[in-house]
Image (cartoon, helix red, strand yellow):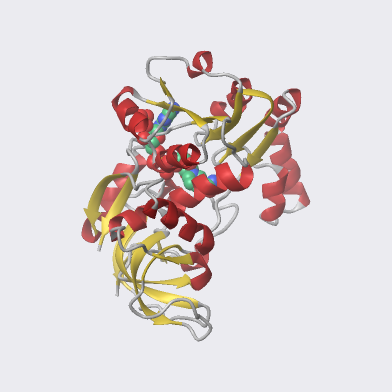
Length: 333
Ligand SMILES: NC(=O)c1ccc[n+]([C@@H]2O[C@H](COP(=O)([O-])OP(=O)(O)OC[C@H]3O[C@@H](n4cnc5c(N)ncnc54)[C@H](OP(=O)(O)O)[C@@H]3O)[C@@H](O)[C@H]2O)c1
């Protein structure tokens, strides 16, 4: 089969190539999906650039892409809840990466049925960004009705789902975006929109119960200026906290270095009697099915910036890497 492969660490334009690779076979716990659509995430080009080398080395050539929607063409011996012909979506396991391919293997436990009313493009846009928003706001922050949440980068792949999810939970949503995307995030339900090109967001928002930090850097530390005492900050881009470091199985010395790096954040959290968590999303078929159900109930919709054909997926990655996508960038196969 044809697949887009990472050939070495480096730039999008020089480190990717379409190659012929073996079509995957299902192990006992897997399904094989014939890909109708995939989507890309910043993680894809960050891995390519070598930003996660310290955690996991790549053996090249390796596939790229983690989100997929398609049709099951083979099921493993132990898989009972999917059958050949089912339309499904998945955020595949890191060991099975890439979805910019004709076929992909997915663990059954990471796979969910695609609702009929959802197109393959919409379904492919949902897994990684949707699970990130769900795991940040629901699993980790335990956001509740009536609470105020600040969601940074409301117009991005994660932000567009996070706004809708927070609204479906009954929260008051404040979000940051630039002038061109103000209407987009308002239409998704944001109650207060701060145009970061025109305003200092910290002068416009305070007393949040939760800050969802998708930006990292100074935004992580400044989140503690925007929360009320006892609030919660969840980051997907900030300093690694000890819970995540242990989950990643990092040794004592690396954990010590990371805790030193995170000390300003830890101190800011302590001063506000607040909690700080940095999360890495997990593949999860049950949560993916919950997101699909929210879509059916019209509580969330897919926000797709643009679609590229499979043959132009390198262009798609170049576009996404500019950091200006409005929702998700999808690839059609
Ligand atoms: N830890 C995890 O498990 C995990 C999971 C998913 C994502 N992430 C990370 O989370 C980040 C966001 O992911 P994504 O998929 O949403 O990325 P994305 O779709 O590429 O984000 C693009 C959006 O970010 C907005 N943006 C950029 N700078 C901004 C700023 N200073 N203030 C407000 N908005 C800003 C842009 O809006 P404007 O054009 O209006 O500026 C654009 O709409 C990435 O760094 C990604 O790697 C981490």
